[in-house]
Image (cartoon, rainbow, N blue to C red; front, side, top):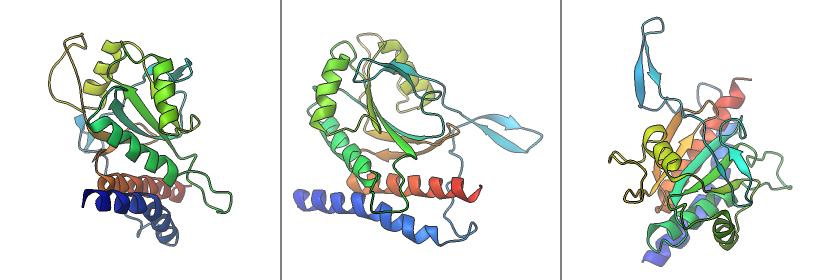
Length: 229
């Protein structure tokens, strides 16, 4: 049963986002499904009478090629899907990486299609064990999952910086910690961040059906952006 669900998940995750894109391409602006600003609010604006929503701050780390990269300045104009893994994880991380691969494949460029979404989103996997996960280790892990470095980065760097980003920018855990060697985050969440760096959704990265929901939300955000032009 689990294998059947896995293969159904693959078909759903790869095919439905493209079908969904075709469907909403013919919708008017008022008909396109809307994703509200995410519920993480940091205050209230009396002038606009609306909440002030959390914007994800900058993060600079080292990618799988040993290059220092930034997620906001370096990927300006792109949506992000971020998760947290470590290369010697034998439980949820392989499932997460397999599902992230499905997202990468669902949005890969197809020269036979006029409309491509591959430039709209960038996938980010950040190690929570940077002491052991050098960029060389991450490159080998990325190769194992056929990651296209133009669309999927594996990042390592300062442990405290990574843990602060996971807790205070993406809120993937509510457990306190200082990012020290006795601190450890092991989250199954995929986090979707829009081009303005607002969090728009959380998804179970081990569940192909929920990953498909992430794919459809990416399409919705793409269409919302294009409708404003």
